Length: 254
Ligand SMILES: NC(=O)c1ccc[n+]([C@@H]2O[C@H](COP(=O)([O-])OP(=O)(O)OC[C@H]3O[C@@H](n4cnc5c(N)ncnc54)[C@H](OP(=O)(O)O)[C@@H]3O)[C@@H](O)[C@H]2O)c1
Image (cartoon, rainbow, N blue to C red; front, side, top):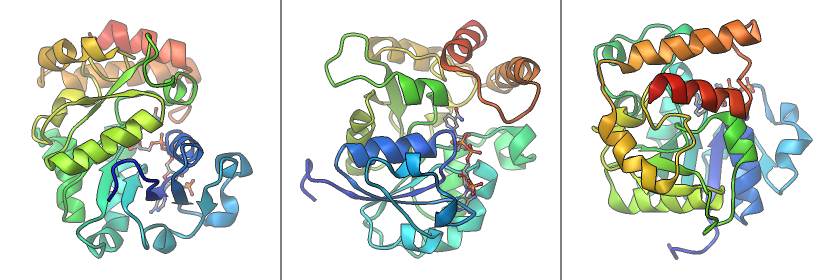
């Protein structure tokens, strides 16, 4: 694979994060196919405006270089059979985070298994954890060209060096610096409640934020932020706007 050539990318999910991934990666020149759970006719024209194609889930995973999962973590086992059947060369990236109020209680994660290792077990292959630590508002609004002084950075974790580098390239294409955060075993450092999570840090700030993460405090801090967002919105599905989300995350997580 030529490191700078356009890629064939399948994306599952057109929600808060998926729809922005679709728009940005198609705008960057990649060949993007996207599916949600309700069918291609339900995917909004705005999501497809930069050239992506709306398809069924089975088509989204066919003949691709990269698959990006952007669905609730609890839904990943539903698509696992399709992913298990992919050729080994397809790189799978995952944006998901574990939220017990949405994903029900998953004992292995509650007992400390890094969320992406659980995902990897479900689909029977390695994943690259990316775009999980940027809020949907910042992701949609705060991307900048490479080299911009105030560009926000996103941690990317995964065990295969070449796959991690490939997804870091795609993170760059979406308007953010990609920080190499190392192995999936260490990826709990970028989970909800951690100092790097949705706090819109710059590249130079990320090493200290990852190092300061305290695994014993993440769930409590995550749940405190959820309580603030839900009280403000009056429901459990509305995402905070970019500035409010970042302010609250910085106060609670850092
Ligand atoms: N929201 C954030 O700020 C944020 C930030 C970073 C990471 N994340 C993580 O990224 C993931 C997606 O988050 P989100 O906020 O974008 O979720 P969301 O708004 O709830 O959207 C979820 C999407 O997944 C689709 N989906 C569910 N099951 C599917 C299946 N079996 N096949 C294909 N598509 C399926 C849904 O389809 P329908 O549209 O048909 O319902 C929907 O488009 C979550 O794990 C979340 O924790 C979220």
